[in-house]
Image 1 (tube, rainbow, N blue to C red):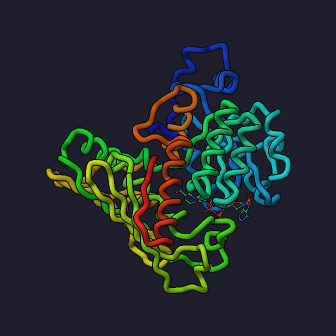
Image 2 (cartoon, rainbow, N blue to C red):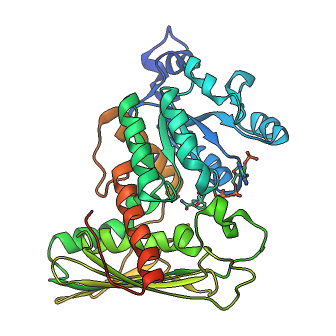
Image 3 (cartoon, rainbow, N blue to C red):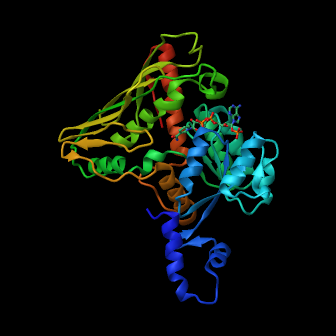
Length: 369
Ligand code: NDP
């Protein structure tokens, strides 16, 4: 990936070919880079992950942070100074519908607590802007479908921050599986978890999080089982255990183990938890080989090996790649190896709904994705 610095160097080098036009003006006027137009993005929710995305976007060649939407005026000022954001591109949660009159902003990246995504994405769509939304896209499949429908109706894209779909070692395993190098796939294991800290954070508040570890981290095992096995699950079983009912209140899962069955007969066995460290591991097993990622979904570098040896694909900052790829999807109609659209997220949400139902009832649930 070229850095913005590389890009600027390239521009300077080619300046000799265009003696009469100052290049910065040319680029600003056309708003393009050698690979195509640049996606002008506003971030909504200037928290921990929003900050990470903003920093990563500094190295993007096809996406640029141009606006913010925040409930905290002091953060807006900080971000304006840090990222050179003009006052006309700053909004709060009350007035951001006015973004529809702002041609500078083409896409809004919603990075707020889970429960807010549904209404915020629908408002983004109604403002005529492309919506990028963090995972989990919504609290359940019904909400998710409403978001998909709203974006379709408004004729805007809905993309979800599934950054692992662009991760090179992950993609190499998918390539190997598709090429038959692992043989018939029999089993996937996804272990996702960490010990959750502050008991007062929104992630442990059912109203804002919509659940517990499954919504936040277990979703990686759900999504991963689908792209690793390469099929959609048809049944689910699940079991919930809790060691701290004060910290993890009713409706906020501490630990859930779940199993998914796939049409070929392959099975997935997964664990999602807010109460164990060192769990970030994927294992895929086939008749002719295996693949392991550990860590599998952290910010990287991701590490892994297969029956053929260590995976050596270089690390790239996930959010930088993701934002450049999203620009290519929006502007060029590029099809990612694994989808990142709203429909993809609804499939994960259907599985989440079914896991919670199965954990509650103790019964095997059928899935139709
Ligand atoms: P933070 O708590 O760090 O930030 C959330 C931000 O949302 C806040 O700083 C605030 O920004 C805004 N906000 C608006 N309303 C509320 C509210 N009622 N309570 C709290 N915050 C509010 O959370 P994260 O950044 O860690 O997570 C945000 C989203 O990103 C989640 O959906 C999460 O699942 C997802 N995420 C995805 C990751 C990935 O790797 N793809 C990694 C981490 C998170 P402001 O003050 O500007 O209004």
